[in-house]
Length: 231
Image (cartoon, rainbow, N blue to C red; front, side, top):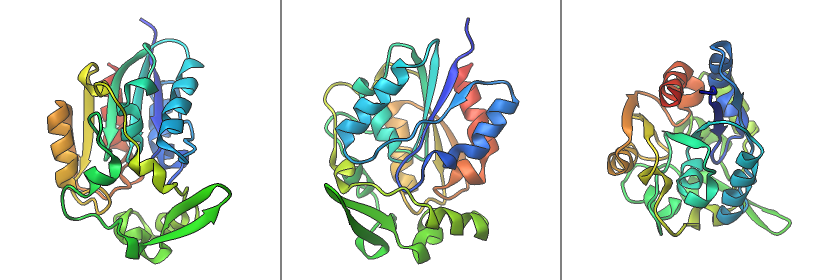
């Protein structure tokens, strides 16, 4: 059987570089890795973008998603038949009709509240950032100071429309085996929400005492989980 390509999809507020330490570990172990960049202007457009991107790849695929990207890979229209398994890394796992915004408010504890956000206009809409002085507390509390500052300065913002998007039809995790890395010190997506979604999806659960930035802070745990999904 061909070795699967490991596709790592970033979420809101960080770009594909959030996977850099995971990517290095996977590549050093001999796995082919690719990390696309989502536009994050509209949920439906992100779904279409990912599917078109996956169509450019050959052979079996394992798709891992961080944060908001879990919504995208849960949409059945985002994936191709070559996808064999899914990994949700501190990520949303919605069912049909559910939105990221609603799921994030289902349990208390998220620091992604209006007082902690900055909204800026761009041609065609508005985009959301975390306040730089709140980035560490909300997103990357256990990262070192240099990483926190770099992440806060280089945020990839999202249009609020992305968090209100949903899909029809059964979520992809009904048909594919899935793993879920749950952060127990997450101040972005509440830990209770992550556990609830993972248990509902029947995902194999891996818990780690980390912030939302778990791909950067605990890359070994994430890489090992992706490899297990690829096996």
